[in-house]
Amino acid sequence: MDGLTIGDVAKEAKVNIETLRYYERRGLLTSPPRSLSNYRLYTEDTVRRVRFIKGAQELGFSLKEILDLLSLQAEPETSCEDIRERAEAKITDIEAKIASLQAMKHALAKLVTECSGSGPITDCPILESFDSSKGV
Image (cartoon, rainbow, N blue to C red; front, side, top):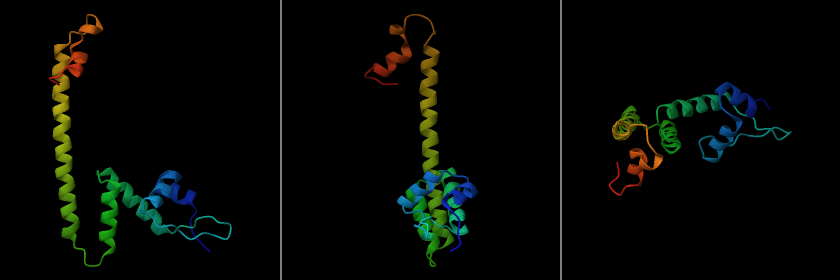
């Protein structure tokens, strides 16, 4: 029986072996057949699938969303529009995260300008703001 070992797949896909096992547990990869000596034997398709998963993760998709994309990819009636809608939803999600991060940056920058950087820590306006009921 020919196939790639888990180490081969990990090396080709540039991931850790534990990542592959985790993807199997999460249902992103199917459990491969095993050799007579009980080694998992993967196909080149597994390497492509792992690269797909990693590429989608790099664009901000969660493993749950990636599983959804993989399921859609396997359905012949899925259209490009179905995938586009998910990508547009991800863009909206990313924009919301950016707005939230910008608000945090602004609030923290304001606190930094209020702090002289001298004096006892008990008078630190940054720490005081974390403790106050009014928040940042």
